[in-house]
Structures are given as structure tokens and as C-alpha cells.
Image 1 (cartoon, helix red, strand yellow):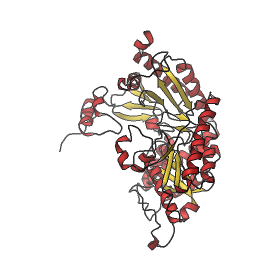
Image 2 (cartoon, rainbow, N blue to C red):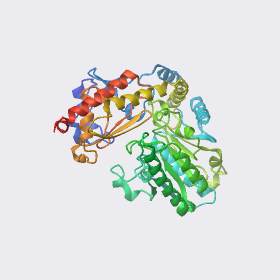
Image 3 (cartoon, rainbow, N blue to C red):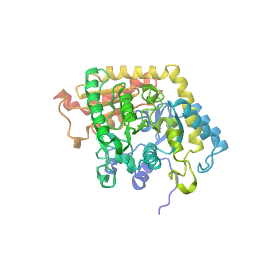
Image 4 (cartoon, rainbow, N blue to C red):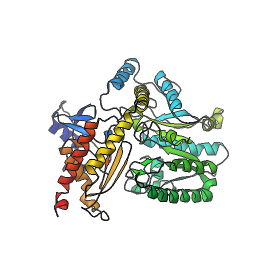
Length: 460
């Protein structure tokens, strides 16, 4: 037990943080290299620390922020809801904010995706889809459909079901003994400027999936994938039409398709929902991150009335989906989500998002396209990933223990841009409504950080 007085002194706050906080996906020993910034406020695409220094939010606060920090309309929606109701359980009760939100989600989702189950984060959205798919087949006379298929290298979250369908890697390997077995098929890894490569990768992946469905379809409950872009896999891209082919194969094999749009939805890939753009209706659609514009935790798992109907029956039949969370459908989060979707609909219709995407692509190419220490750049929508390599040696890689990606991000931080590496790759994922001058600052600063970090490489 400790006693103390409230302070805003950064040294004291950092000492308390070091003593008492366990940060996610963070190695505590690295605080010696780079003490955490104490972020006190946000304005637009900028975050300000307790000393008043500002930083461009180049990660959109872990890929969530849509409109920037402190958006007037979202703040207004939050204040209005707070004046009426902060929270009420969603178990056996409803409230207007969530009711309006489920109606709006049904309007923007494709086809017959009209039923929404709320949770708190992307991992749980996927977990709900997996459990619901499994239970649906049990309730409808197909108890043999117990297996799941997913892409190699996928990332779907950190709960045990989500880890199971994620690929092997440092996030999940230690917990594999507790995860269930998953069938795998390869993932396309494409660049939008290389059409031939698109077709080769996609053809192989689809052939593997078809073979898998032919062999295991009668025992498969679902196929899970991130459409368009595999975020934590390094922004691996799928060619247009790929997801539609996957949907066709799943429907033919009577296997549920679970689309994890936690990362790509709500403008990130340039559209409200990727599945709508691809012209398909999955059996389950998982949403989170940008749902509330990056304000509050909320996730949604959408499905059809047909699937939902299987869970309806007398109490003694135990058809109920026994899953839920204390703060499910929180009214504050629901109110912000509804307003965020309404505003984003208008931004998409007015071409605001497309304009930002075009500016982002131009600046990435102009500032970083010729850098000798970048092996490959993958950019789609308001997402980008830079794979780093020794100067002019694209077939070589930096030893992972050198932590080049981390060094580049720390250099960028010194210059006023916040980024977070994926190994020795650098994802760049700014707020969706970032201004063109801010995009320029982001890309120029990243170039400077690369040059400073890799000066010896560049001069050798």
C-alpha cells in the first residue's frame, strides 16, 4: 500500500508508472531506453504531454482514431448522453442509444446482417463470432462441424479463441497448448502496383482454401479472415475480388464466413465496410476500433436473423448464447458510435476520406519511396507499412535483436511523431481525417528518423 498526493510532474508520474503500471505488449525493461510519455490531452491529430510538447498521433492511438482527438461533434454527443445516462445493464434491458445504434448498423451492413451482439473489444468480437458459429451448428443438427480455418500469419486478438485462429508467432506461441487446433491456408501478400503478383498469390491461396474445404468442409464450422488488409501481419494486402471468391467457396461448402473488420472498417480502407465494397454478405461481421471514432471501448458482432433464430426457444432447451460483459452496449460508447457513423457517412459521400487517402499515398511515395533502407512499402487506404532492410540490400534483413524498428520510432518521437514498430517494420496508421499538411509533416519526419537511425548504413 502506498500514499501520495496528486501531481502533474512528469518525473513523478513516470516513477509511479514504472512502479505500478503493467502496459500491454510492452517490455518493461525498455522504459530505461525510452520512458513513457505522459499524454495529458489531445487536439485534432495531436497529443500533448504534461510538459506541453505535442506529438502527431501516427498510430491513431492504436489504429482507432477516426476524426482526431477532441472532435466537437463527438464530444457533444458524449456530453449529451452523460447528462442522461452513463450506464445501464444490457442484460434484459435496452436503452435508446444502443437501440438506435443497432438500427444504424443494420442500415450500413450488407444483405441480411441485421442482428448485433455488443462486446468491448476486437478480440471479444471475434470470440463471440466463433462461439456463435460453433453453437449454431450444434443447435441445427450438425455437431460434427467443430473445426475452424484461418489464414497463416493472421492476428485476431488475445483471448483464447482469437489466439487460436491467429497465426503462430510471439503473441501466441507460449499459449499454444491451451489453444484449439485450426486449419490453415496461405495469405496473399500483394502490392497494388504489381497486378501479376496479386493474381499469383491470390490463386495459390484460393486453391489451398478450396482444397481445405473439399477435404474438411463437413467438419468445418467457419473460416475467419481479415478482408483487404491483414493489419498486425504487416499490412499484407489482398487483391480486389479475393474476399468475394472466399465467400463463394464458403457458401458452396456450407461453412460460415467470419470477417474480422476490426481494423479495416469505418474509413480505414477507404470505405465504411470492406464487405459492402466487395459486394458480399458474411455470416458474421466483427467490428471495433473505429466504431466509436477511437473514443471508448466498444465492439460489435453482426449476424443474420436466420442464424439468430437458432438461439430462440424454450428456456429448458438451453439455446441461449451464454456470453456477455458487464459494460456491454454502454450508453456513452453507443451514443458516440452512432454520431461517428453518421458523420463518417457524410465524409465518405463528400470525398473527404478519398482526398486524404490520395494525399497520404503521394507523400509516402515522395518522401519514402526511394529510401535505400526500405525494402517494400505497402499502402492501402489510410494504412501503410515500411519493411526495413540494410541499405540497398533488399534481400537482407536486420537481425531482430537490433530493434531497428524501435530505434526509428524513438527518433521519430524526438521529432514530434508517435509511431510503434512491428519488429523491423514500421506501420503508419494516422487518424482518418488527418490534414494534408499533417500528412506531409508525418512523412518528412519519418524520413528524417530513418536517416538519423541508419546514418552509418547510409554512409558505409
